[in-house]
Image (cartoon, rainbow, N blue to C red):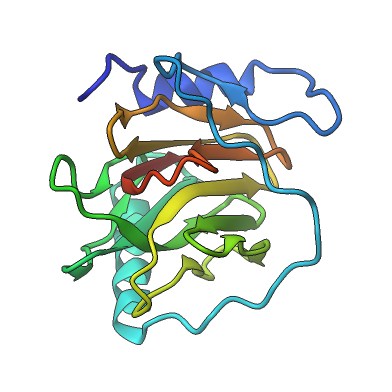
Length: 210
């Protein structure tokens, strides 16, 4: 089921108003989740090498980011684009800046997410995967796509953690049995986490905005 939510822009503005975070605390919660606990931020640890991105997906992400920059009225636009690998379907067409990617109400799990951004100072992501747990942080500079999750293994993603070097980031997940949980936001170098852990619930769609 869908829930009444803040728009990505409103949620991000709320995140930017946060002036401090408690050490070790998870991301600020932008919306109520109807009693569904949000996933905890993954523990800090060494960055792990991401798997090689699919060349076709990488090319599509680069083109989506380029188009988002062309369409932006800002001199130094900040954008984030992402594509999901969905059970029984494969890679979805990339979207950018808070648009949903994946499926809703079809009971299909996201298995991987490929993310690229511009003018963020760099981005890190971590995926919580069935039978694996948190995979480990994967980081890259602006213009480098970061892949989390798995493909070809039939494993659902249950949560996504994201962090950027400057300003703020927000993420939301459409989760099995619950629908959209509500945007989770974090300031620069903090962690926003969308989805759940320890409940065996698949993510079916995501939205991310910077």
